[in-house]
Image (cartoon, rainbow, N blue to C red):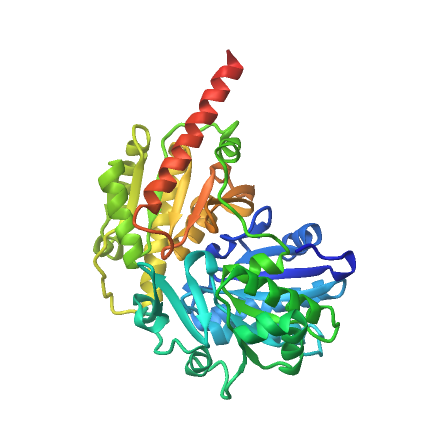
Length: 460
């Protein structure tokens, strides 16, 4: 899927949590909206993820940060064709309307006067999220289930009723008129030229994209790049991870090999074992946590939500910090929130923020006492906050994935403290099978052990 030099397209990804990078390699992630850092990375790589964590924010805050990124995108557009991506959840949760409108407003505030067709393509092929006949599905136990019939549609902050994507966009207020539908026939028979025509015809309206294979995704991405090379258009794609991979002109990625994983751990100077931090409460995360505890028998420290909410003195936090640090010296350690849901009287996002802040503070204090061999952050909001605030990571490079198209390992580049040198794995709450978290732990532990053996041989 190589492009000609004259077809160069810069892709700026506003990612509402860190899990959008599960389908790419060797692409930079920026954990704060530093203008110079973002533009420098775009100039060097043609694609850059800005991890806003906006899914955890109130709508007004999500709008503000995306408007700023829209203004930065307009600056990048001065030198190259541009696609702006609002990377969101493949199960439809998030600030769909606010973030896409903010990106468009930011472009216009910085002087862009052309059209920004908005392309809705939530498909995540690698995780079994596909769209057929405008209905979006999750593959669960081998069966396609409309997303409105899954637990994701009952999300406390972003619940919805419609699996039919045109109706979903109207439900969340993104549009008052039915959007253009790009069918599988349009993609497979009409090809990229026909899809590009449909995108141009939409002006600044919405298009719903059907896709059930990576080949479909590649054709749609080619069409978007063709449209982007018209200087009067900056497409805005609200999408899952699969389209980002294709827009970044990368082939479908397979899992990192043993040698590639081992290379990540060479020269690491860890003093402790691995640390797994689980904040996500979706059923898949709970099953994976149960599997890990049963089969790997780590030291498990469960955080009481009630005690977090009532910990005005910081005594409970200090207690958990000491327990985790002590455990890391002798064993694989799991820090997780209790599985029962707690109603503190606030909206769901406010409670999530309080708990995530607590987990980040614990991780930050622990890694100063004893550096873990590696860290896994499980859950979208959790994985962002552990990286940014727990380990102090400002920017990182995607090394690759632990499984085909899922679960990203990153190598920190810039940080606020030494903890960012710890190899870090971003593990979404809603991907994989029951054994996936255990499998990830085994892969990382084996790689770290192999790296230690190589280091011992070099010394000898």
